[in-house]
Amino acid sequence: QVQLVESGGGLVQAGGSLRLSCAASGRALSNYAMGWFRQAPGKEREFVATISKSGASTNYAVAVKGRFTISRDNAKNTVYLQMNSLQPEDTAVYYCAAASRLWAGSSRDNYDYWGQGTQVTVSS
Image (tube, helix red, strand yellow):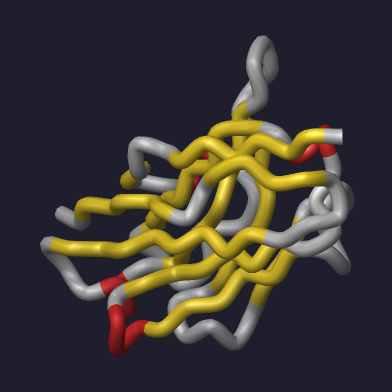
């Protein structure tokens, strides 16, 4: 079983950038496809980005494509989400998730383990 801890959230002005990190422990991150999701107040948790086990394949939600980049460093057991050109609508709690498969895609049901989340707030 893997444990996931997110960090890097905070308050940023519109147009700014943040980099979220998700550190894994318990099992090597290389065993998992990884994803980032977010949940705004009063809304369902939604897909943001995903990356394959090897890091060779990625996919993004339409709302963040071209602004966010997911990456992974298996040697450091860490996954990242670089977020640029942030907008107030990006305000949410961001969660990383691990899936025991090569590729997990955008469905929450494909992910087996979840972190506790980190708050991102974008002011206008």
